[in-house]
Image 1: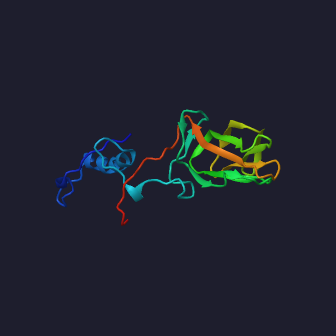
Image 2 (image 1 turned 45 degrees about the vertical axis):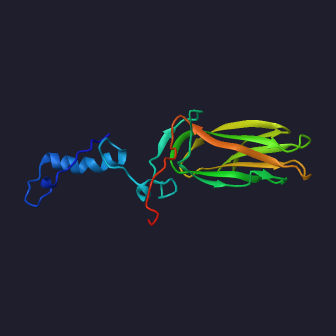
Length: 192
């Protein structure tokens, strides 16, 4: 981690000599600022990284391993779908596009059905390839560890076995790993 050093106005005066300590501070201070070093000012609002920006995302790509340690909030572009359906055709409950991770993550969801005489099917896909599926006529917690590469699309899909006024429901959707991005509140002016 870089060290933050305050630069005195006298050091940047046009008649002041350029010193090695000034040059080091000019080189390290932007890094210290981005890393949140002690004494450095804090990044606010529009300056903060966002998972959906840039060709490779604006969050640095980090290696993670599937675990239940942390629930991930950032690092994916997430698109909510339909979490309760009477469709007999697969319906997307949620879609994630990976923008910040390599390694693996644990994708979790609860599968249930509104009437125990019917069966709900829950499926997990990666890049439109089926990874696993489960059936239940009650309620069950599901999880699946998925290896990740940049721009991988992970989807939870579900359906009901027969059209009969019964819903397949997906809830408690989460992604977890041994490390990863979590959302932190930032402040910006409302007029920005």
